[in-house]
Length: 218
Length: 248
Image 1: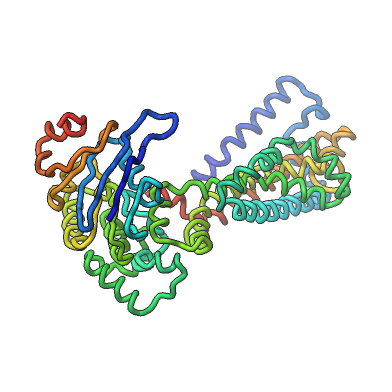
Image 2 (image 1 turned 45 degrees about the vertical axis):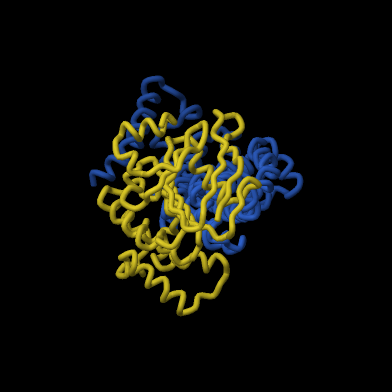
């Protein structure tokens, strides 16, 4: 599905970071843990933007970040269908119906025609999740998508992701394993030196084990 | 009523101080005329002053509109390409770094002593803040947004019209607000260098004849005019502005 071979995450003029080699198979769902500044987001950017070190089966990658990139003046459904509009595709009644179905699945059916700027943080995250789903990409990259949400909304989002992304290949970047525990089993750890794993996520149930792992001492 | 009083307070304080200086230092009226003298001239010469005020106002408003349109258009043309922005930025900065006083005689030579040279001067002074702010709007998109839109495989033109341009609008509007506050400089400098009408011309003319009171009256009208134009632009901008969208 995705092969990364000797991808250097360092920025010129900054502290050196890990050189990553990583194989992700179709259907793998992995949490990528690491301290801030270890290059987690850079790794995702390289997967999206393409690099000589990255080989992927499909160009269709979906991405959901902490800032969900929703147009605040547009409605929830317009944001879900944004990809179609940006590609200049005409929107058939079927795609509109599909968007409404997806908004229903993320429990936002009644908010479909509400302007995004009027939605809460959790609702915005769910609109963005519906957009990820309508794009029908096999590979879904989630870059700390639950940051900034309260604990109960995070649990709700994790449950939705577990249900709706079940058939996808998923990389969830996070610094908090609790975001992934209810949903994913496997984790990789990115340190400034290397990428390590796979580990079982429940190994990091205690803060001590997590800190050790993030320090690269596990 | 309280709001009106608090708005007028600095003005009244200034007039009070002005009067105090004249009484305490016995300043002659051709150096610093008293506020009542200026007020009298303002009323008596109102037809004359208002004619010149109209000229200056039209220079400011037309220059502001032309500079805004040009500045916004240039930013839209180059803002979508990092390379093009890098290439043109030095020329844009130079257009701002050259003092308008230095270019004014040239503009007079090329465009004459009439309206065109003042329009050019005001346009030039308005152009840069609008361009620079709009360009900042194009560049302000967070990396995570860029990556998200990239995964939606957009057509470049669609991305520009649907996403990038609307997101740059609040930035462009802050540029217009700044431009509205500096636009009078362009018009007045133009009138000083060479003209036969306008408040700048009237002030220079009055100064040459020792009519300091008329000069002060013209200056007060210029301040009021600049303030009025700025507040109208600000109100108009607020109607379109939805503040920066990236903050959420």
